[in-house]
Image (cartoon, rainbow, N blue to C red; front, side, top):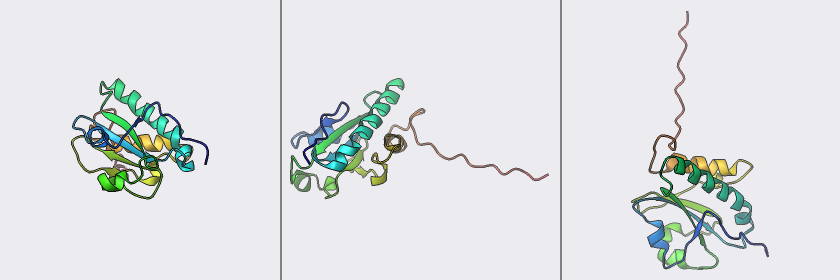
Length: 155
C-alpha cells in the first residue's frame, strides 16, 4: 500500500525513548493508538480517530479539564520489535489496536476492536467508549447508565 495514514492533528507521535514517560502519567488518561502508516485499515480509521479526539478535547475544554485525556500513537512498523521487547502489554499482531491508560495506573485497558472507529458512527463509538471508561468521571463526561424503567402500577 503506497498510501499513508499521514499526520495527525490530535495524536502525538510516540518514540521508543519517550513512550513510558508520555503514556504512564499521573495527571491524565492517555489513549494509545498502535498503527502502521501504510496499513490500509489504519488509514480507514484515521478520520474517526481524529473526530473522536476533537470531540473529547472540546468537551473537556468546556469542563475546564482540557489536558485530562491525551491522545498518542505509535507506529509499530517503524519501530519493529520495540513493543514486544519493552512494552509487552501493548504487543500484538493485530493492526490497528487501541488502549486507554488511566491516570496513575500502570496497566493499559484495551479498547474493544469494535469501538475503535469502524463504520459511519465510528467517531461516536470511540468517543462514547472513552467517555464511559475515563478516570475523571465528572458531570458532563462520565458513563451514561441506563435509567431503570419504573413499572406502572395497574389500576
